Amino acid sequence: MIDAALAEELKGSLNTIGALAEGINPFSGEVLSSDTFWLVGSGVLEFRVGDFGGKRKYVTEAGERIGFNTEMRSSERGAYPVTLINPKGQRFIIENIEHIISGSPVSISATEAE
Image (cartoon, rainbow, N blue to C red):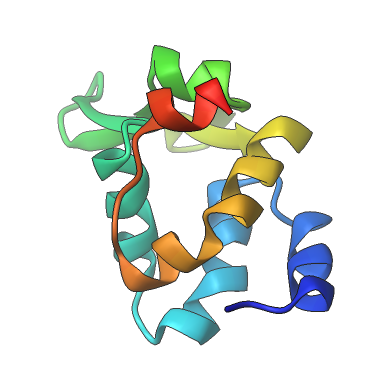
């Protein structure tokens, strides 16, 4: 089980999917895609084809209800989605950190009922 001090340390820094991956990957020993696929498998994210082809990650309606949202940003290469995690979503991550590390998806509807 992850200890409370580590959970608290992670909680303050998990405001994007990238930060989530950086915080969790040292413990899981795997790459970013495992964290992303856990979020997809749990119904938080989904892949959609972007304007210029290629798959991009977007937050589902269920993901929005538990504290995740997609914000569009732009760079010299064009617009791209960024997944943001508010405090409610950070709590979801901390409460499910062991599931994320082990790769076992959870049901969002079950966590919403708690």
